[in-house]
Image 1 (cartoon, rainbow, N blue to C red):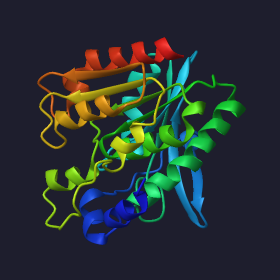
Image 2 (cartoon, rainbow, N blue to C red):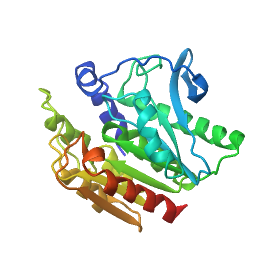
Image 3 (tube, one colour):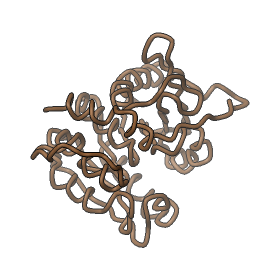
Length: 260
């Protein structure tokens, strides 16, 4: 896998400034939900944990590039109502986290974040069943965790994700010369080709940012025997959860209960 070349391209400042939109969160009144993870000396990524009553499993969730973990203070109840714990990871420079985000760091940081989650679950007496989920940009760290640690996971969920990040540059209109495409793509498509755990892909039928084709290609490339693509009709990139709320959460609930 020629990942180093691809990562170097995506870490270029003119690309990072278009991919990442970091913003700060106000600290919650009750900081018991906050879990800082030291990812580098003097740099911490602050995650938020939303436990469910009588939980059956936990989702390690990587959000989109314009969101923060704090945005899930309200959304989390839609997961916990199903008995699903939600552990939302931020990125460097987002929310209450320090540092500066790059593609390299969000992939690197995903692993210590996963290790911290496993410690939190063990110390709290929660079920050990973990699913990893990524939305949009978050599909990259989610697939990275599944690629490196699939034996420790029950399944992978990809929402509004992409297969080939080089194509992603063309979707967002970056005025940059991109190297010729290689057959293996970067990075999600190549990695998912080695991921065998159950996989659920959710995508909006009318996604104008990341076309449905990307989800269809991820499904085709996936090595999982148990895999499914759920398409939300009449939905776009940023509203599929609300437009297809019942279908969206039914798919997640069924998937987690089936493979827990």
